[in-house]
Image 1 (cartoon, rainbow, N blue to C red):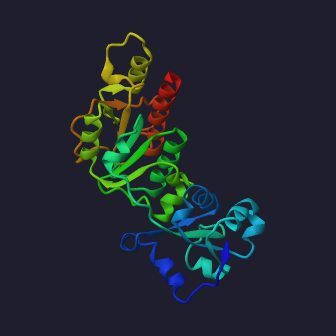
Image 2: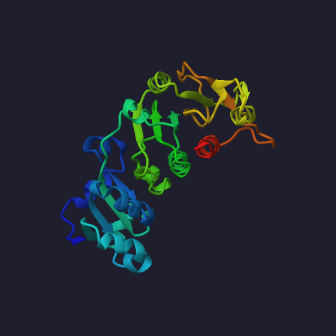
Image 3: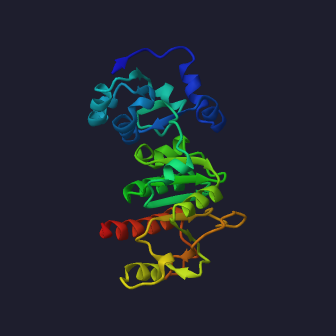
Length: 278
């Protein structure tokens, strides 16, 4: 840890990074909160430009403070009134980072046993939750396609609680390119679709059957899940070459499932089957 004073204009530059156009312009963003900053420093400290923390942060989060203290990063003490002009969601600490170099679709797909591709996901909280669930399920890669919310938004990073630094994430890609690459590698491609013609239960039973001849429904094989927009599903989204559109049964009165919940269900079923196979 290298304690340094805050330079003139430094906080103004930080404030600008809360706008997507400035994050893209400078290839930098903000990581907020003790849990996210901890995961950043443990798994991707090379991205860090500066860490900012309030004077009482070490007392409130001593474990995270120890990680900061033992890291070779520039650290600045920031007053509460200065911090509130930037963010009210940091719990006393945030990091200014370089956005990591992006994976290509081809590179990320090469090692996929379970992957997930997201088209036009618009809510930062949903995207962050999907990334966190994908990380917990051991998903190999996430593909964020077709005008989805910016994965490097501070809100998304905060919602995924540091999981963004654990798993390959490909951004700004075309969903059809992702599907085409999966098919080149003989990876099954399933869309989770409320109007699908195959139920997830049927798919699960087929996958568990030793003598099943329905190869295209086998979740024990390498699988890419495709998820559509929260409100409109796959309306207006090009996705040719799917092996099946699979619906998650709804047994109660709810009209539909939240996209983050639906994503978590299908990823975990694939993960359970594949890990049991190994």
